[in-house]
Amino acid sequence: MTAKIEFTGRIRSGSICWIDKPVMRIGSDPESDVCIPSADVAQHAVTIEYRQGAYTAYNRQSDPIKVTGIEVSAGSSAVWKAGTELQIGENVALRLVQEGDGAPSAESDEGWDRESDEYYDDIAEDEWASNDVVGKTKADAAESGSKETLIQLAVIAMCFVGIIVIAATQFIDFGGAPVVNTINVESLLNDLAKASAETGSRDFQRIEQQLKLAEFAWHRGDEQKSRIAYMKLRNLLQERKEVLGNQISKVELEILRYVHAKL
Image (cartoon, rainbow, N blue to C red):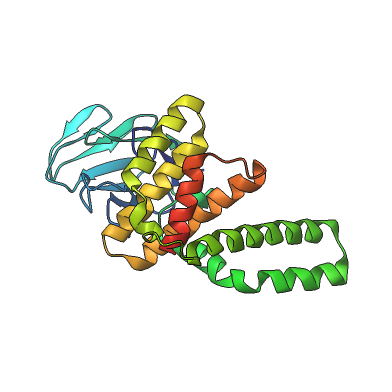
């Protein structure tokens, strides 16, 4: 049996966080079990607790929240019923989804949408291990000659070619200002929002939310978390380039240039 939190408000809309322990913290602190990348949300806004088959939400911030349509003042709590929303401010809405008794369980493979320490650790381990992936896959291809390994090698080669081309544009001095200083992040976010509204694509929403998360961690001074978030954003954009045959939008190319400059 499992339970998860679905983001239904304006911030992180469509994202999912699985509930894998009885007590979880929700807030803007990157160390939170459920991280909300917004300066309008308290670092520790809400605590949720699973006890005797039900979830309870405790308001830890100074402003009231709404739980299952009921206003909960600072320091108070209310039962959070399955299928209903927990609202934090105007832009954050979370829906509780339960299966069976809804007890916490380490169930999901959708680690992409989680902002827990385990998520960051997994991403970091994958990134630090990436330096010797090419050598290992080449050796495996030579030994086994399997189709799967050859496909993996081709994908990795394409990634590295793309990275080399982009990196070259970063290191060649054309007499202009550094890329980081010439790109307006707020303008990029506005362009992403427009593209998302026009196309209805959730990919643009994911890119927008990941960029916000990376910028939020960077402005908080958390270099490690921001670097990991930027790396994840880079991988998402590179993946779209491969799927779309390099035909990604202008705003995505600008974000990719910006992310490589930040890294």
